[in-house]
Length: 195
Image (cartoon, rainbow, N blue to C red):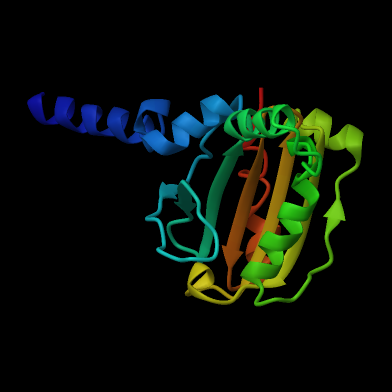
């Protein structure tokens, strides 16, 4: 009986491994500041952060028996708006509204991760991105990933979503096989969205 209780406890702990309290503090802080939710998909395990100078990210998941990893980077706009308002008050005229930076930021990120190449970026239809991510804008692109960020992987599918006044989020799906995108993407695609 005692052994059965220990096994049952282990199963319960294993099945609740993705409670919000188990997520890294930096990730949960940024989720909160950007007014986002994250629902961890079944079958994935946390992955360690790969040190690199190309793109920061706060959290990663890995499929246990395939080369498929998802990395999440969240950029809340609260502190950016504080700086924006301060610059406007100081009389600086050449300041871009933080709600207008998402497209250029995504393009620069994709170029940085692909070794300077500009992949074809496809914007999501406005209604679809609103329905699926509660976002105001979203886009995706696929490219050959280079440098330390992509170490061990050949391909990256990047997704960016933006919600006015709240934040931007980048999701990077890394793999060495296009088949993995077809087979493993659907269960994780909507894990991160705006409230």
